[in-house]
Image 1: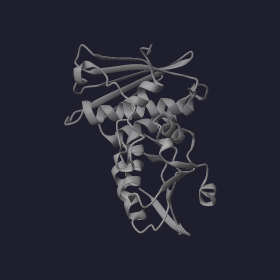
Image 2: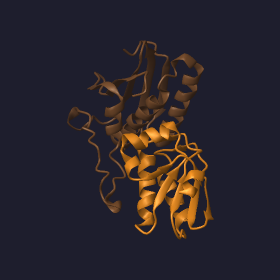
Image 3: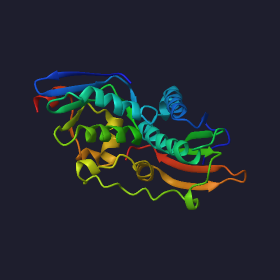
Length: 147
Length: 109
């Protein structure tokens, strides 16, 4: 569970530059709590994809886009909650995230479509919902052992 | 986006002097790669040893950089740190590129 007063709480606007700044802030916070840096690399990879997706899709064409990121360490895993005031996911569900075809010829190699595949591979307990105030809410956990 | 390049024999070595290749710089990275590899005559080695984070947009930009070289030139990678390597393995892009542990190894190959 994400606690009421999570260890990490970062609020950002919906731009790629803000995502970069938020992830760098996250790294800084993690290094302040040395014992809690387990699997921090995986946490950063997953959060980057989740936040980039929010910026590119949910908050596309929104000038007042806001994202909140809450995370805390809980025994053997990270618990994360990301909320944004953007457009709902298509069909109210997160994409399947299938592996793009990397066996294609050079010019047909995929340059995108990896985001949800990485999230679904690395994150556990992924739940998407719309909140009572019409925000998107994605919660998930990251185990503290690299897998 | 700070990239530099030099030529050793027939190999063009491009070094990324940035710690992150992410969505905020992906397009810039692709454009800078074109400038640094336009006159390459043989193989290109992209040295990522200073990079400690890439996301899927950064990965896409590296693939795009290889595609814009065309089929004449191969592009190898060197010096992937743990987090960067993880993204290549997860997406199976490690099967597309030849990945060398260091620039020295890449040049000897």
